[in-house]
Length: 551
Image 1 (spheres, rainbow, N blue to C red):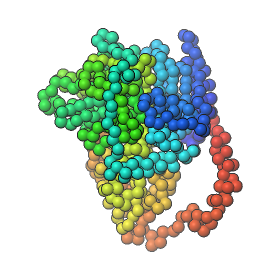
Image 2: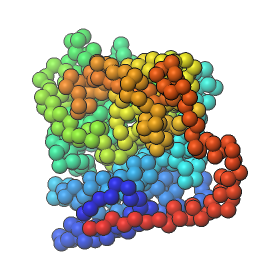
Image 3: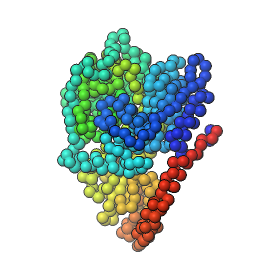
Image 4: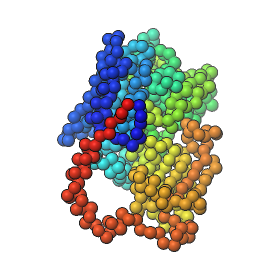
């Protein structure tokens, strides 16, 4: 199949293509399998938001009513159909326009397992707003994203620079959906649930969307998202990277001579818990992350005690896997696993593992899978809003900061430059503070939008002189998963000053004006006339435009 990286498909056409492919593929073959049927909810224009979303299911209901869910009856993951669908969705619709995907049944290790299995539940631009109870700007993802960033900044300002917190409330276990089914002892079998092998190069099936709840007498409480390889019916790996919350707690316990750590892994979280779990919104390990989730929701998280330890976990989750991580036993090999950079991660010779002591879940729990490095993982505006507020304390000239999810390692920073050399000076400080930023591009805030990829490339092409407007940091803290780093987690970094270069910085004596700026300044009525007379024509053409994938 030939690929045109520039084509775009609307949701209706992609669904038609997938349905046709599924009907002619393995899912339509013998053995009682039925052809996959793809459908999506009609995108009703008027609806009442379901915010705050108390559960994963409420979230899925809300975005499905908005036309942001694609359903399929059956998908053969032994043939990696779901993985290929994830890539094809990104090819056709892009990382910020693709809907969530739900498969009702999945073939795993030769057996059809009842789902649903879901991915990309926070991929579309609109989910940034929906997760916080805001309405998206119709057909304008960048404006939606900008509005959510401003909402977070306003929230911080109203609360003295901190996010609001509402402590969780405990509910009786008979009121906790996650306790509908309880498995202990010989009844435990994690393999009976539809966790998949995401990539052909992976070492096996993974639980890769769990919030791993840990506690430590010195470090407090934490939950974070780490991949967990299924090693048997009652055994899984637990893979926090060095420096992450659970890793710090496990190592602190080992240093004190403790022999084990109790863990509860929560799956099928509500949107806010999921977002906090996968990000660094919490500033320190001492903050109550469940209270932060409550504050962002405007409603406390309901919690219930775990079955085999004292940890309080979200009562409305889909599943909780409880267990004990031995700290005095030899560690075990783990991986490889397809990671966030889009490359196969390293196989680890030593990794933590957990013996499962209980599984509690809803009846027929909904399983979320993350195709790491393929689709967006969670809404990022809350994290970027908090990060931006912190960076502005570092340098008040900073206007906006953005890390494109589709290009891990890039960072875009806009400033209001007030003196020569300022862009490189601020850029170096930011690059050292933000581990994930390996290539930092600094632009003028006056006329370049960090959320607009075209404008960022334009600034690099027309304003950047590699010499002298470049600085290289030979070694700084980077990401442990960066496949290009020979000395993980350390990395070299580059700062690109793509602001207009002043004469004192080696730039031209006079920088010419932008043609578009001249049009806006000298003929401002031109845009108004076009919008009034031909705006509908342009919008309708974009909606109707279809470019088919041809075999």
